Image (cartoon, rainbow, N blue to C red):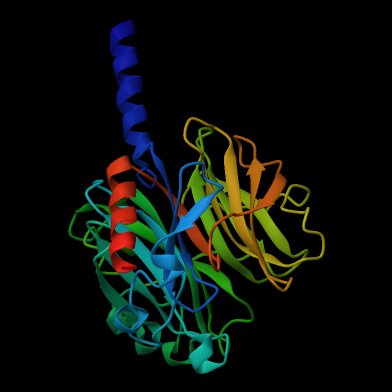
Length: 346
């Protein structure tokens, strides 16, 4: 009986471990980010998570004019491994302030790659309404999609338990903030599901509404079995806070008011991204402190519960760091990107 019990525990542990983005690699880190030099996606590599080297000099690794079909600009890149570990998926905000001269946008770009270098993409222009989604008959969160003002900072969380109408299991939860000024008063968090091919998207549903604007959510599953969300509050007492839930798409209580990224004082911060260093159960939280000129992209420490933020330092070696995400790499992947960078700069 003891052996049977242990076997059941191992099986359950293995299953629960898949309920999050796949982590692989013990050689280094990829920082995939919007460049502050322009609205495009850039890469930087690091062996320790703090000191980085730009790939191709911090220039665009993906042509935004090709993949951002709405405005020709890509912001807030979030990257992770595909659910099966055989490739990579990325999502970006399709937006170009330099072109539009306003802080509005209308959609997002979903991207896939096998090698981190060559990407294919699908763009979703939310102004077109429910016809762009794979379940247009579902109940809609808006009466008029043509008046949408923002679809901001999407991120990805693999959910093996999501059930599709045809009986298939597993989908990528894409969560992001939206604003439709004629129909709501402030930015709220929504979510959709993308299929395994990362080309189909369900109609958005409301993730939560705390009564004030919230953007830039970042969700991680911790060892305590709870989902932990870092998020920027733009209402109430502004700042980067943490909230928790037992469920991925429901039950998000308001953030803990006395435990947040407070050491920047009155300086404005956003775009948080949490990651763990190899062999370390504690967390690192990166974010952009954007009210200074020049801006500062910071990495601070947090404990294993993603609380008690402390010891912020500037990221080193990155040209134009901005809102982005972090992913561990194998030695083969790391060296391939270095070689590609050298070839591109000849």
